[in-house]
Amino acid sequence: MTHSCSQFSWLGIGSRRRRAAATLEIIVCLLLFLTLVFGMLDLGMGVFRQHQATSAARFLARKASVHGAMADEMGKWGPGTLIGNAGDGSVVGNILATRMAGGGDLALVSYRVEWIDGSNDMLLDSRVRVVVTIPYSPAAGFLFGGTTFVLSSSVIVPINH
Image (cartoon, rainbow, N blue to C red; front, top):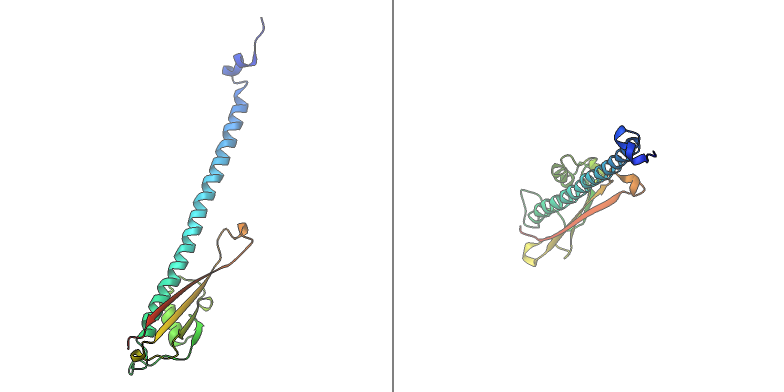
């Protein structure tokens, strides 16, 4: 009487190969799942940093719009261009630093405030542009070759005061 290998699988002879294949499938699926989860977290951090840049630019633009030619007690800003970073200790840098809580190194968060019509006078319908730039290095930087992305946001508002 001859016996095939499949007849002995219930004895455990062929089940070792099946257990090894199942383990391999679990490892591949788990690696894929963890890669997707950590990729989503990394992308979420990038979106958060972009939101920080946009929120800071809007806030700084509102502040700049009320510091026009008619602002006495608050102090006048402009019409010269203001350039710096959130860690430079200037009035604008300190305002920006308050919006960057948990934002990492403040010296890397830069701003540019410029009066695009050449004036800071509300009566001349002048406008101010604020650009805030934040670097972002993904945690999975090895996939991008250690690249740092520059996230930037620009806002233009009319002078209100």
